[in-house]
Length: 592
Image (cartoon, rainbow, N blue to C red; front, top):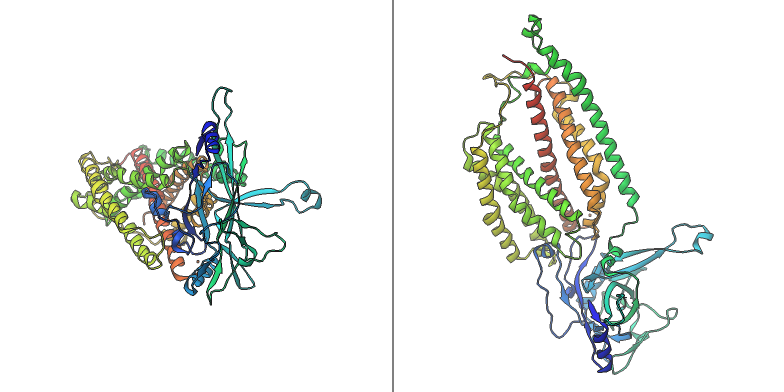
């Protein structure tokens, strides 16, 4: 919010109060993963409830931004004011409402408010060093997103019914002849639980807060009706924080060194794989190719061995070429979408201040990247001797998105049953289906058409008509063992960054270290390519071949979707790296 000095002067001179709107976003809990609307609990309501128009990302996140009855004005202090404007008539909670509040407190729910698009935060102060000398010096300060609905003590429930808002504003430096500009740069809250008898309210809805040492908390007994007052206070402070830096409070990470450790760890993994690749390509492969191409030793030429032995089978089409090309096409879609989203976010174009922008951008990009997914899938399908390109295009457009939609729909039914705001509304679901069938499907068909018409990949050797019999493999060459071995190193390259991403998702935190994420993503692509080449070479040399049911369901369901997407992404990277490697080495061998 930006106000000029003249506006503030005339507002005080004429007795006009400039309104400053506080809005509620949702209630969240890291224990249940079920967000709820603000007014799902019996909070004080304004005379008219108005919901903000939200974008796709906000809806999918479960945000339901709504107005509140808090009356806040620019630079106007309020010591204590009753929220519901009934000072002589406290709010009476029914037994059902009391049970609901007690349940939400037990589930550790947080309340999220915003002012001028800044989320409210609770200040946490603690000592970083336990030594007595260090304690006397200074405290470390961190901020918790939102504020706790209440707390438990000796199996009793206490509600935070008084909120002390602290709003920081920055006065822009201007010349003497110009007007001052005021900008809100931080929004904090100190929640308190104060018993009804300790709050003294008058007829003007003003109240007096008790001394901190002599006040008792407001208990919520779930077995009976409860009476209480909802009150709040407002305090303004001038701050040196500038407008451009006002989000730093919410995005500052205290563990940046861990991210650098992650990068160094990932680089070490890449160098390790590069060393193995260098040994294979520079030493082993050169030696193999030189031996295979010797024309002076007829017996060696006639008696093939090693990876040259399987040259007539290495490019044999798989049993289900349509499914393989469809999965790889979806992997290309994911790769292009993730690469663009991370790069754009790294440049600062997807700031958390633009709520839902990241998820909205990801959804639309995935739809539009269908043309590239269809192109690569179509060309590969033709290379694998496929002929039904229309069916292949339909499979590419429907297989992965269909699995994702099916899982999300089942999870959404359970969320609907809990009346959570995390449930995707029916109009939004229809809009997503329209995007799927109206944007993604036609683009996949378009890309598939041109990809199928393009010249197929040129394999350097012919495929034998009779498949070669696969000999019995040693245990360490088993495909499942190979999958585990191939997945360990790429996972080790980015598991630390994955930890922070998952923490941000499941604990309702902000993740904005996209510079680190971009580097880790590049390392992941390189490491996946390298480990795929290494594992394919080894195969060629051995011849071919949470607290409740619904929260737990949501956790494992959404995690399964992320695992599926990650599997498609890394599998696509590994397939194309290994395919180019195999074409390259067999192109270097003279085969009659």
